[in-house]
Length: 326
Ligand code: DP6
Image 1 (tube, rainbow, N blue to C red):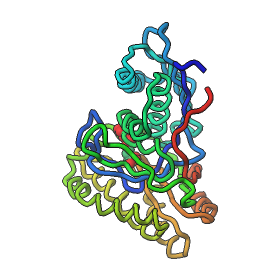
Image 2 (cartoon, protein in one colour; image 1 turned 45 degrees about the vertical axis):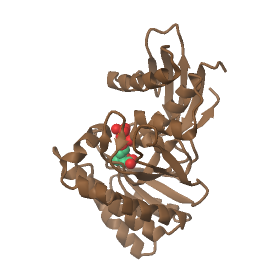
Image 3 (cartoon, protein in one colour; image 1 turned 90 degrees about the horizontal axis):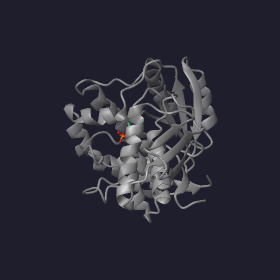
Image 4 (tube, protein in one colour; image 1 turned 90 degrees about the vertical axis):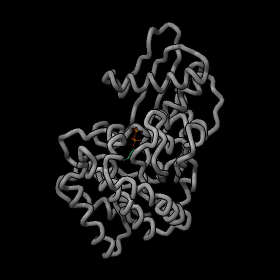
């Protein structure tokens, strides 16, 4: 392997306490801290090669050239890496997800975590895990949580250098499963970057942000003590709070599909029937149902019985972003 080329692999993550809104958009400094779990089995694999014979950056995502705004976002991110390394060489980026694209699973977290690790390694930079996490954050906020392994917390920090994610519990600490209900929907949702910039237009956002330290404490403690009931309660509340902000921003954002609400309404009933499970939704209609081992098969079965659930993907906690063979 030439030192100008590197390949990295990173998992997406699911947030139990959500990131929604920035206090500074360009640097992606979040309005509140967040906590998530990396998703094993799902990953983005990215190779970066700096090549002086190229005129500009070349990008291939899942076998094809992506739309221009995507290339621009990647080039802007590579510019940060180039500036850190004091070089101007264009790069060839080849990236693939092993999960279906267009299925509505956020891939920007795994994408910018893998790109950040591969690009910094290919550029010859020596970076610590927190530095790498802060770098990935510049590409996509949630990507900073996919650099460390297991259950991670993104610390808001005071600026660019100390706004990064750390592991709060390793992947083998607690065998939770994320059962992702993929729904049949035909519209493309408003992307999270646009959504973050609307958050402050909701009068509910300041209350949501002010209360975030309380929710983070409860969530962190529930993870460390493996208290599923407390985790379930705080994660559902946090997801509902974020969606309340989304629905009350100007313009309002409605991510739930009728089937999302159908599942949300079923989950408390399932819990009363002694099936430990909770729901959380990101900027899309897919519903993530979290349960401890060995309940995943029961959760999948109940989900598949709901009309319009197309497929269920399943993921236990995943490790950190890592370098791989090209
Ligand atoms: C709803 O990290 O995708 O999934 O920084 O603009 O790329 P950008 O936003 P992104 O936002 C994630 C929003 C969320 C909640 C979360 O994962 O915390």
